[in-house]
Image (cartoon, rainbow, N blue to C red; front, top):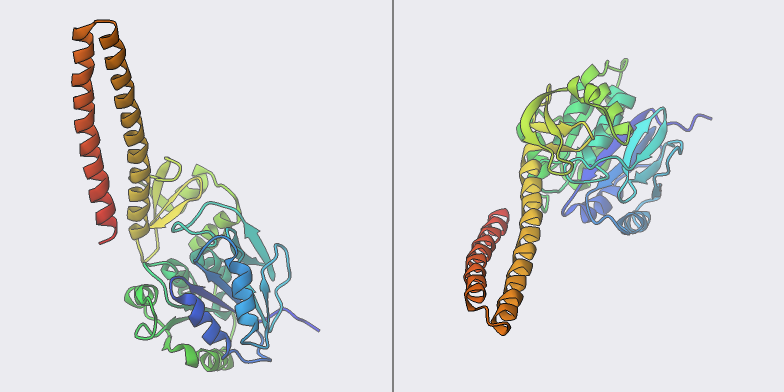
Length: 334
């Protein structure tokens, strides 16, 4: 008996998504020729086991954490492991520790692209509650490959950014409440007919890139044009990815960002750098104070006074840097 599912449902959720996932799992029907794969953008530690436990309480389908190399079986729910990308290939899972995409690992987009390549028009993508634009690029890959595009009704989502991003960037096939999801999936599968649609070569190439821990410059040059920006994670060049409906950047190490996530990551990196600079300035001021006291004890008044002036100058730099840090952090919260 063939246990491989003919169809795959890939689900992405972030902030506010845990409760939505539990409510949606209640609606999943048994006996469909489908498996479900979930990426939840939350804490990297411990959340995977908790999600599995939560879902097993509300559904009769088998729910477990995905295992590298494990065969995908119908009537099963698979949850991505913390800090590991989850990809689908040849009816099996590939788990990897490659670079983060949109500041997350596992990444919704990585899973969705691999599902588009593996299942093309037999893939169904679902985006639930979450912030920013995560999942939009991956959903576009599913859409381009003939798959079905479903989003949670933004009016119901605790954080509607992710569903709205998909809706604002492409024509979605279905907008549904959590309570409607199970019946909607069954309806979509019932009407799926015909051969699988060819997958665009750009989608195939980018999914292959995600299978490796790091890539080469030659690979990323095939999917993008070099930009003026540097990767805030590794410092290398960022390439402007071509053919996507949402602005996206990728470096040759493998880090990838949508535009809004790049702004956030740049800010985080700038803050880290400035905090290091502030620490060094405070240490320098402390050293100048020590030298001032030492010179004074030896009777070198001019040298002692010189160090007082240098301390005052350093304090002005410290105060200015603190103001920049305050403004930067305040800007990130607005």
